[in-house]
Image (cartoon, rainbow, N blue to C red):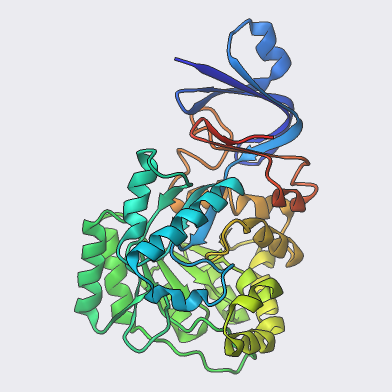
Length: 392
């Protein structure tokens, strides 16, 4: 069995991402078998292939918590591309997967695609036939017949939701995804937010998921739909751009799950050239109120949150910057794509931290991201399951 020893200036190890200087991470059979210093490893006399990154900081590979394979927010008109063919969607997915991996994403949680390409590509990646992050997939996202969801497919009534939930689970998905509210955020507190799925429909999806011990996710910006999601027991509520202070307290006190943040959709002006003009105007109107709403999550101290881009492939670092600007500590923001992201995904026993027994999912950057979060913009080294995909 081959042994690899990665030497680095600093490794952020364990659940608290504690800095170990002059670190050596020993890897055997795709897993971390020892975390020590390079001086100690050399003194042991053990033989290994050495990867020297002595001027870098190593941290766990990042987990992108909200992605889509057939959407690419970097492309003009991407929201209308769901009408493209399965072949065209697959080509988009292959490019996005490559870019995500090279940016330091070693695991991605995909929340809806057409034709089960996410399920197929997950297996292709596992077999080594396609290059990309390891995937968690949801298959077909479910929306109301009259509701929002470019990626979702329309449903009406409890039995239609149940049927698709079971078909998704038959296909081997990891999570069931529903679209509860519109996508565009409210511009002011009193603005009405529609809810396109009934409580009974939401609860049916939750019950089906629990029967097979898989998780649920709900696209939900706020309004009555958010109350329904908490009451029904949705595991992860996505976006929450328009969450009220009262709902923040509800989540803090009642919700036992997670909030997955995708702040860049509202806050990042660089996305605007690729969106319809009407959507851009709506985002402009809502931006400052959304910022207030979003920042409540980062400043709560009680709410467990993770971070995703919603298909802005290769740009996860921006979400950490928005979290820090909104009041999160750099440690909490970094946990939102590593340690806590793994917990939310149910992967805490195999990835998300540099600890003995974990998969060797590692990335390296020039500086310590706990001191300069922007260093994640330029990932120099990527290793997934002990295999190097990018090096200085």
